[in-house]
Image 1 (cartoon, rainbow, N blue to C red):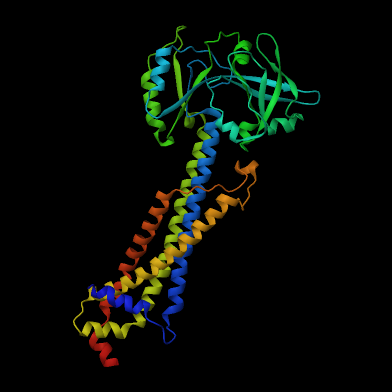
Image 2: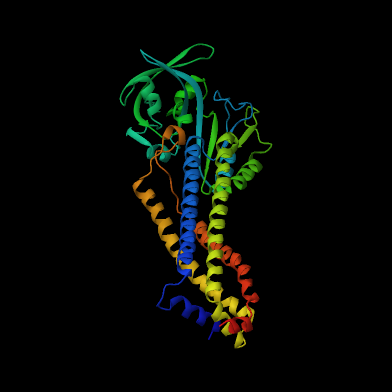
Amino acid sequence: MNFEYFIAKRIHFEKKRKKNVSRPAVRIATIAIAVGLAVMIVAVGVVIGFKKEIRNKTIGFGSHIQISNFDTNNTYEMQPVKMNDTLYADLAHIPHVKHLQRFVTKPGIIKTETAFQGIILKGVGKDYDWNFFKSNLLEGRIPVVNDSTIHNEAIISKTIADLLGLKTGDSFYTYFLQDQMRVRKLKITGIYSTNFEDFDKIFMLTDIRIAQKLNDWEEKKFGGLEILIDDFDKLEEVNNNVYDVCANQFDENGNGYYIQTIKQMNPQVFKWLDLLDMNVWVILFLMLAVAGFNMISGLLILILEKTNMIGIIKSYGATNWTVRKIFLYQSLFLIGKAMIWGNIVGLGICALQYFFHIIPLDPVAYYVSSVPVTFNWLYILLLNIGTLVASVLMLVGPSYLITKISPATIIRYE
């Protein structure tokens, strides 16, 4: 039998026949740990959820990796590339590559009778993955893109539709400035909204052949190739593999390939998201510090209240470390109880927000309409382990006070 555990259990679970001095302090310490853990769970869930939401929206507009003409120079007025079947197949067989899709972008202006708006026409082919825009479609449908005919259909964002007074089913003229003015009449089949204002206010999607005809390109020429992967954490690894495949490769016109990840295409977005990690670390440190100091004060009061018991146990031959272990076990009981309540409260708040979206946000400022939450069970487990270990380690030092208690002095005092 574990002697220290047995004594600690008897002390902690004994029925209270009188009001203990330590009870209020212990309750405060327990509440502090529970609240601290709950706040940490909520903070981590919200920050991870927010980063994931913004990251997915950015990827939805630009994919994980883009391959374009080396002379494009990061502009939406793209130079054409051609890619042979061998190179395309090599890219498709890279580990973690989920999907490949061709695209062309071209700047233009939508003009109605009362207003006009600059846009980026993004032409996509029948190989395009529409899942992102389907999930953000407010009304209507996705444009028809197939091999038979060009339907001159497009989807626009709610932001553009509101600015120009357009709705699903309306037709409009888009003007493109090049050697000579070119005009295309398109019909709105759907309206989407991602709440990502920076992209919503410019992107319109249509058939890739419309953009190719505007540029006088043949069908095999396109602006770039988008690569979707199955694990964002493998982004750099896949990018290196893509570079190895495309390095020193040229199309039949002698054009080199320019490879960019979504982080390189949108550095300001991802640097902003990286700053959120610092906020989480500050919250974790503060919560652990508050909970730890409250637990230390609770332990000290417990030791002072049980001074007589400590003296008696020592007089029977118990070592200082034996007595310290008794109080550390008792502290573990309190910490465990606090952590159970902390998990219940923290996960409960996250669940309410996840399913019912009870806390709204201004999408203009935050790019989302409600506080996003993600349940990352690995991080939650690590938070619990970290809280337990940090709390126990913070109590080892204060328990040293027990070594200063002399059995002879205590017995003489009694």
